[in-house]
Structures are given as C-alpha cells and as structure tokens.
Image (cartoon, rainbow over all chains, first blue to last red; front, side, top):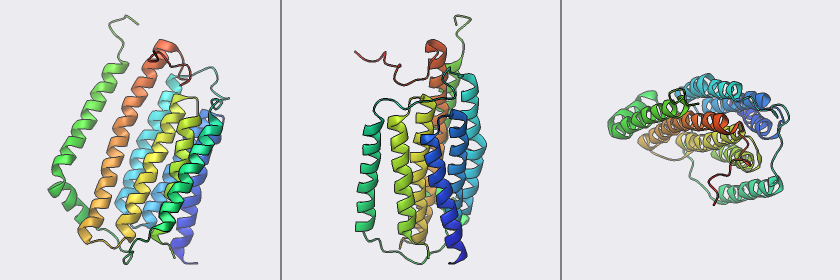
Length: 164
Length: 105
C-alpha cells in the first residue's frame, strides 16, 4: 500500500470516528474534543488531496478558532445535565434519516461515473488568481457577511443597560 | 490507490452522521457541532473534485475557492449561533432544543 493511501485511511478513520464521537458521547466536553479530532482528520484528507493551503486554513480556523469558541460557549452555558446528555425522543427516526441519506448518497456516488483526470495539485497561485480576480466581489461580500455576523453577535449578547 | 470515490464515500458518511446529530441531539451546542460536521463533508467533496476530476486548471482552482467561502460562512454562522445560544441561556436557563418552543403557535 502506498504512503498516500495510508495517510488517507488514517485521516478518514479520524474524521468518521471523531464524528461518531460527537454524536454518541454523553459528555459535551468530550463531544467538543471529538469534533476537534474530526476536523483535524478533514485537514488530513485535504493534505492527501494536495490542498495544503486549505489544510492549514482548516487547522487554524476550525482547530484554533471554532472549537475554542464552542468551548467558551460551553463554559458560559453550564447546564445541569452537563455530563449526561440524552438524545431526544425522535432518535430512532434520526437513525433512519441518517442511514437513508447515506444509502441515497452511496447509490448516487457509486452509480455515477466521473471522468477522473490525473491527480494533480492546485497551485496556491492559481487559487489566489481565481479568488482575487474573478471572485473578488464575492470575496468582499463574504467579508461584509463576517462583519455583519460579528456586529450581530455583539448586539445580541450585550446586556441591555442593566435590564438583565 | 486513492480515487475520487474514496473521498465521496467519506463525505457521504460524515454528512449522514452530522444529519443524525442535528436530528437526535438535545443540546443546541451539539446540534451546532453536527452542522459543522455537515459543512466539512461538503468541503471534502469539493476538494476531492478539485483534485481528482478531469477539469481544467481554472475549474480545479474554483473548487478550492468555494471551500474558502464555505469555511468563511461556517465561521460567521457559528458566531451568530453561539450568540443566539448565549441569549437563550440567559433568558431561559436552558439550551435544550426540546424546551425552546415559544415560536410555536
């Protein structure tokens, strides 16, 4: 087995195992760390696909920012059933929905033949040219979305003049 | 040898697990984490196509550009969702999605 296959299977095992950890564990802090494992697994998959820049972005943004923010939210919302979370009553239905969508996706994936070309990397230079030349306006709109989301978050969690 | 179909199967599995988490978990924060899993499944698919499919150089680059947008929107969505959850916790002292039903008629 060649080296990239080994890396791929390790990363895929981390991704899927971490995802199962998120949806199965009873302790929400463990769920946050399982999410971290899963996101690092996704970064490994990006590396196998020669997307080094995206792997780095994935580790920095998800590992460095999103999981930390989720842990802060856990800290600020300490609920009484913090360590023994339960699923709600519709979990059998959720299993059916999950398996059903997995089956549909598998049929779609295995039944469609995609013309695969030579496996080659996308240069960061090509990506930057596409992003900052042709997709410059969507890029600016995305930054505006981030700004609006940040202002909205601040407005929403602000305490209203001592009212609460 | 790793092919595109490997990436697609991992992506499908991650998306299904995320869907199960969104539907079955009680805590709003866990629902949020499951949504992140689903967004990552989409990213895996896009990166797989960008690397393996028989596209031109430009189309391959576009696949990765869209992943950058997905990550951006995921970050914005997470910030807003956590603000909403903190607000809910302050008003209701609960982030259990089964108890948050005051938009019901």
